[in-house]
Length: 629
Ligand code: TTP
Ligand code: MG
Image 1 (cartoon, protein in one colour):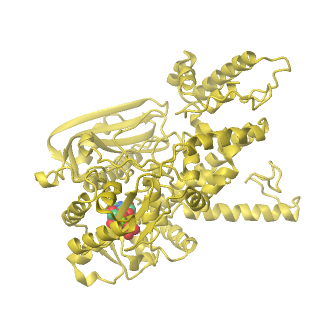
Image 2: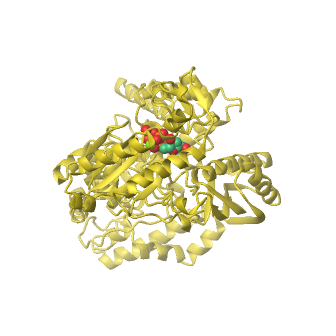
């Protein structure tokens, strides 16, 4: 990024600015301001882009940040946000430094040409033959609550008392939204009413909606209680109806049957349909033109955050690389291509082009084997702190179980030592359990036996599940795919560096978060998804340079001179490709080993055996690609 500040002066540590020029001082002030705004934004939560939030978000973020300072729990939440923000900032700086390092030796026109070639390849996969619809109920729990208690109609209210699962559109005008702590909602909207939840009612309403939808596509893909995907292509053709008429009819039927309104998006793929369903919310529909040029134009100005699967962390990391809209992906394609390993270039191309999966098929809820929550943090040793964390995770797990409608018999506590070793301890009980009150004593018992430990990840998982939606045959399969609301789906995976997913904030239920693929070597459940997220989400940040690798291209063209892309060393004019490759292999292994040795003796040993380096090579990385010339 061009900046009036020299690299060293740009560092936050500057105390004395007397030797700075006016331009440098202004740049510093702007950077500080941006940092503060970004920090305040970290309080905004995952549902920050929700329909109906009309109050100025910057203002809201300030109120939330201020209110968070005043919790009973002496600043723990606030301090945690401060820590996480700092770590995310470091992570972004690391990405920036990596980008600069790789770009220093890159041949930009050639990188751009390669990026264009990949874009063409991705473009060739575009399919606009199917009409996909995403439907999403408006303020779902809140609307059901109004049916239960009509006095709530027209009022600012939230559903859920400790944490809001949703807010009425009247409350959203004040900035109240899903995932927000009740006390913060009250700060933003002092007259807000907080109601209890009534899951049985939401499930019944969802079932009624689903019955209507199934008339239009028997392969209906429910993504949660209140949203789903349909492929209406066959229906349109057999009934000789347009997409918009079909969808208007669906919405009218749903409303007639349930007295609840729904919004819908019509597009050639699931990602676009989902984005579109939010466009005319509440009680509206939006149809994307099935035209390549219209779609790409639509994507160009779309903030990356609007892409399902791009959460807060991805948003900020991409922003750090100059990418705020999908159009910026193209502008920065050379940098993003060299960052393929961390950002998944093909996924970004898909976002830029508006290309995604158009497959609509019922998910397989019955395949879920467990529901779990994990959190990562900096090393924790304090026993009380660890046990508090267990309690807080158990509460979060209860919410996920309630939401996903599961109970289970086996409680597993998983932790990761500071040496990166994973341990799990499990205990089964004779009856199905699902509340924190039931899970916590077991989890505590399991964890207490392990103390003292120095850990950096903690998780609780419930398995041997029972599907609580299978009350009778009619409801079976009703929640066919818990997919999209994946964070709520339980799996929290972690990197050594905290991510948005290692949140111990009141953001109990995090929907629309990015795929928790920021994983080194652990995943609690593997039964997520069905999500339309087109992206390959971020791979591990700085401390996990050897984490998950992305596939890359097999291009044979030269991008760099005989300069090692890892250590920047010039290898001499006569160095052949074989010589360059040998050097890169050596460098990769050397980096891998030194990286690992800073962290884990176990990993170090594995790496020294060449296992990891071989794995990385097999999977293919940007570096492999750079090597293949
Ligand atoms: P959403 O469809 O995301 O929200 P909504 O239906 O309340 O509002 P909108 O009009 O914007 O679609 O979620 C559906 C329901 O899922 C919501 O009513 C409550 C529940 N939910 C949670 O429990 N936790 C969450 O974090 C979110 C976002 C939703
Ligand atoms: Mg909804």
